[in-house]
Image (cartoon, rainbow, N blue to C red; front, side, top):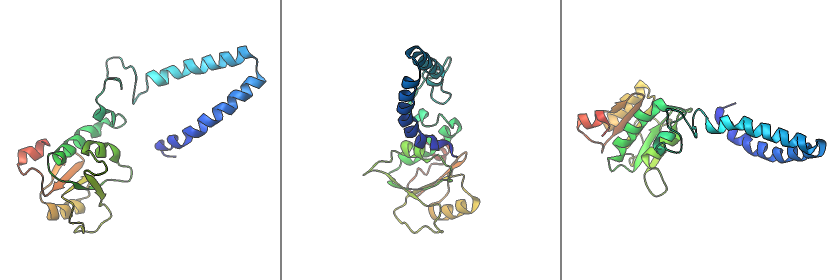
Length: 187
């Protein structure tokens, strides 16, 4: 079962908690149910306050209360923040409104979409990973390819020009900064 399926189980846990509460109330005395409730609350405190990916308090670190929002998107995979941020910054400095994206099936696309400012009526993304080369969509002005295969790098390079590479993220674009230093720095 995938890690993200817990979001599908949560409604069941919430619904069943009412049934379990009624059963406990009818089967046990008040002192027993109060004790069980107190134990459950105390047991939940570490998970609430010291959650490894989004802690409310973190000695010597940064809690979710004070952390920048962009950084919170990457709390489960912090190594992706820098390359995603640099790739998005490069696209954001251009006038490109239709961005092609090729990302693995287990890819981290939502944080990339947030950094790109994807929203209705604004910049849009189009999934291009399954398309043959050359791409058939002339409205695309940039491609972000995560963990790009060599054949795709060659194909996108022929269509969009030399890429900017940020670790595992490769960016191709017609309207991106042409200054090599800007592309290398992601500015």
